[in-house]
Amino acid sequence: MKINTDGVLLGALAEVDEPKAILDIGTGTGVMALMLAQRFEQAEVDAVEIDIEAAKTAERNFNASPFNNRLKIYPERFEDFFEQHPEKKYDLIVSNPPFHLNSLRSSDSGKATARHTDRLFFEKLIQQTAQHLTNEGALWLVLPEEAATLIKPLAVEAGLHQSMQIHIRSFAESKPHRFIVSYSKNARQFVEQDFVIYQSPKIYSTQYQAALKSFFTIF
Image 1 (cartoon, one colour):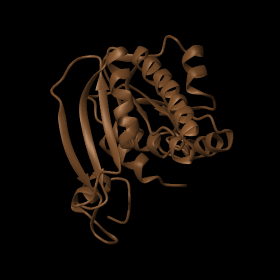
Image 2 (spheres, rainbow, N blue to C red):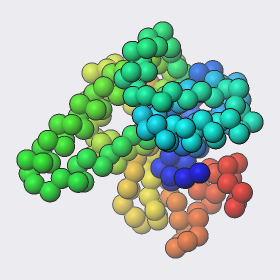
Image 3 (cartoon, helix red, strand yellow):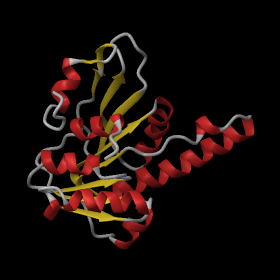
Image 4 (cartoon, rainbow, N blue to C red):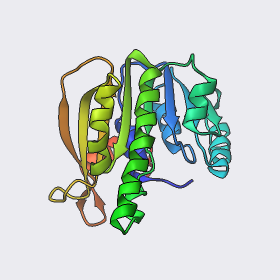
């Protein structure tokens, strides 16, 4: 099973009080959905994945897990999923969305097109997830800095309030390379904190080990 550092950190750190319904958008092979099913024993977890082969792998992983009765895969776009299930509401929605568009553009016109494409994608993601959150629910995302900045006004437009921003750093002195952010319908006290992955080269920090010891046998 392919393990993505961004995804596992989001799966370990995303938090909401006693969620009963969870949605993982872009689940890939299902790692984050499995982590959330393990952490929240009362929750039903829906997972959406547009890549058919990845969705098939996720389904196999779900069926082989002890949480298989609480996990369900939907091999489709999140827009189609929401259109087909307008009644569904979630206490927790998580996503580790794609953010490769800008980095692949070399020309100024290409970068402008990519930013526009990114904005349209995140507009749909934020607007539609906001509509499917319960009143006490929360949206958690892991993003690069540019995307984390991009979604702030989009979240405001959708009626969401930022409650958390976690700066993910490889080392204590490193610049953050990812941001885990949380938004909810109700305004809450904003919390900002750092998360360091490595204590030294190839040696995981105690913070990383503590967050993932329930999931990885190496700790």
